[in-house]
Each structure stands twice: as structure tokens, then as C-alpha cells.
Image 1: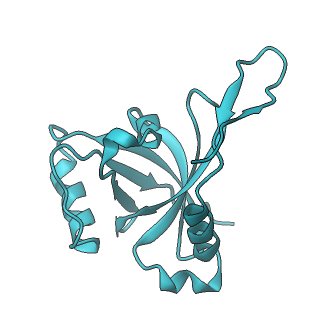
Image 2: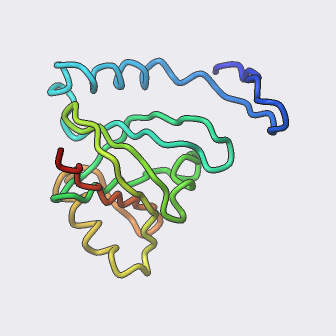
Length: 148
């Protein structure tokens, strides 16, 4: 769909490639950071640095939230790679209702003790989106802002 292009890398670092984000994602991300974000309930913006590539990844995702925990179900995960950055705990920023919060995300496997709670949080917010045992869940624990 989009041609891959080379990105100049600093001297001594491996070269990386990047694809231009799909137009739909760019439009959704623009809406999520605008006053029109209310038109997209249940969507958030994820921002993180790729573990191996070192590049900034920004993408929209459907989510569920309970207090300081955000849960994202990665449907059709075979064709997606972004969630693999969270196989071990990894820093992430989440924009919900135009508020950018910092947190730490990790994949919750079916055998994980946090899996039932994560599924409950996601299903409460996204009842029309099924969650199967094969779907990775990314659980993000938000870090409360420091008082000033």
C-alpha cells in the first residue's frame, strides 16, 4: 500500500525502515487530540518507543479503563507487531479524553493471574468486541502525576 522508505540513522546505529501511517490512523489521531475527541468514544492514543527500532510509535486503539488501569485487546494479532514491545514491561503514554498520561504496559497471557480482571475491564467498555484466549491483552498501569 505505502512504499517503505529508508530513514537516516545516526552514525554507528543500525538502519531502520518505516512505513507511512495509514491515512485513517492519522485522521483518528488528529481527532483524539482535538475537541472532537467526543466523536470517538472508546478510543485512545498510544505512544511508545519501539524496543528494537528505537522509533516513536503512535497509534489509535480501543480500550477499557478502570481507575489507573487501561486494557487494550489486540484483535487479529497475527498481522500486528506493535504489541510485542510489551512482552516485558515497557513505558508508554496514553491519551484518553485529550489527557496524556504516562504508564507501563505489559502483555497479559491467558495463564496470568491478572487476565480475568483485564478481560472484565475491557469487556465492560467494549461489549461488542469479543475477547478470545488467543487475543493478547496489553495492560497499562498509569503512573499518577506528581503533585506540583
